[in-house]
Image: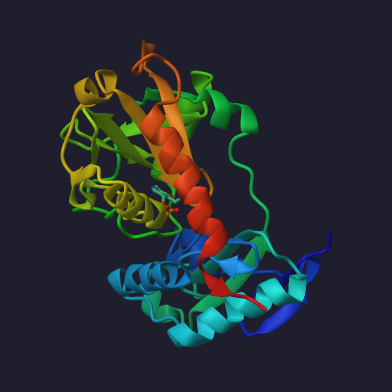
Length: 291
Ligand code: PMP
């Protein structure tokens, strides 16, 4: 299928969707983005994603050339022009074209584009059987340098960790922060469950505030479970009853092995399975209508 892309105010066929080689998003990773899903003709948690996009932009002092409501409408219209009902949407805001120097003030205007596509991160087999992951040597960026709460175009830290995971023949990697505490994965947040208590790292230690993470925390609370943000090490992962990852693309996926240790009985846990189906239900029944 030939996709229609939103390109800075215009809707163009994908082969015409081009960005300048002088764009600082390309030259320096200077920009921000979002990854959003739509299900059943509704965009899931659109307001939360838009708020994070604007917060990320604010944090890097990037002015998005459109109002939040205008970006929202551009997203919905991009999906409509592609006639899709389920899929993945990627708004990207770059610093825009400038000169070869680093100075962001030499880029007169930010550039925005929106790509709509489908995404399959893990095959069905992994949702049934769970993931085998490892902890990688590359540490998550320290918040004092580049705060992982900023969903920036600079994903090299995550890419390096992904390479290490792939070298070990696994699909995802646990990244620790500089103090050795579990932070998150290369593109997902992480949860452990012990004695029916769910724990996920607080974002201040160096993790993205995942929209899926927050939604799952709400679902778990609705199920009467205790949910908390807390700092933990690999020991708490190895000895957990259950472990799972959350992300827009991954949704909720069980982790059954970490660094060669089986988690729980080595099969997707009961609570994780329940949360997976509750999350699916939420994605199918809520969201901003597209049509
Ligand atoms: N952490 C990182 C590093 C991510 O890139 C993502 C999104 N792919 C997540 C966590 C999960 O966030 P969300 O649930 O908002 O997609």
